[in-house]
Length: 120
Length: 108
Image (tube, rainbow over all chains, first blue to last red; front, top):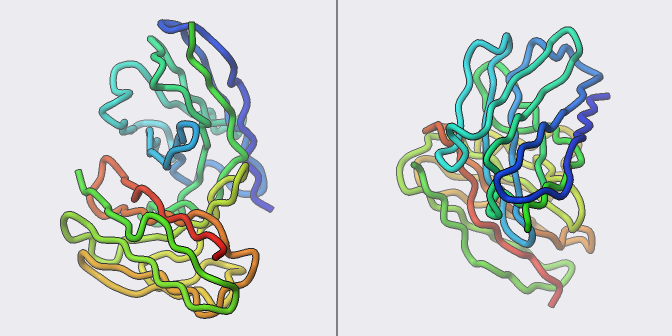
């Protein structure tokens, strides 16, 4: 069974930094692109970032470009999101998601999410 | 950026009725269109991929259609557990991958 378990969320002040983790199991982690998707409280889903299978290529939403960094450790089956210069508008539940693979970028598997709150 | 516009924002129906949800793209996405269901406090669940293919374990009452810029999710006969928020998502023109703003399906 595919499992994705996020951790690392919390409450922090504007300008702060945080690293989210997503532990994957139940599939060959190194074979799939991975993504972060966030959801502000009471609002819709927003794609944040993606990383390819070996970590050599990544993409970001404009709203986080230059502040967030996605990475992965295939030996540890873990995905990361390094978040710097955090703003109030970054407050959201952050989900990691696995795409379908083979060039298809829809998300058949999601973690349970971790809440990041940025507030003074 | 490809903008997805979902309509209606809220749909009020009774169990047993047919639900028709719409998703319109600002430019063609071919059939790279997926639908998700999200219940309160839960992660989204993939229902439909490639515009018309049901994901594993999704009941046959859910169906998707469309291509290019106009897509529809149909629930043929609503069950109590179907009342939730539904999102469409395109992965044709990225980055960024984009989602619609959601349709809330509520019990009438």
